[in-house]
Length: 98
Image (cartoon, rainbow, N blue to C red; front, top):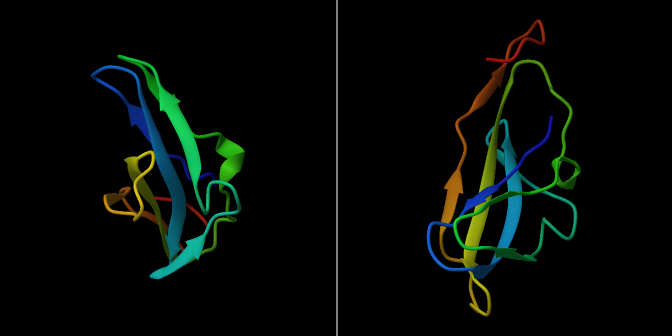
């Protein structure tokens, strides 16, 4: 499974700093560098960008829940502020995902 972050820019071109993690069975897991620590992303005016699918992956584990967690701040910001979580994916005992 891949964890992604989508950037949608409705104003002028902007460069942001982002990082990505995921939560597995209520425990936060760090994604590999560079997405797990900090990447600079420039999103053109009116455009949408998505992180690469190989940037952060995990195996589906039965009877666990998964959720992506992403941070996005203006480039040059000293501390991570805004963060958001994806909807939760529940993996059933038989391996099916809901």
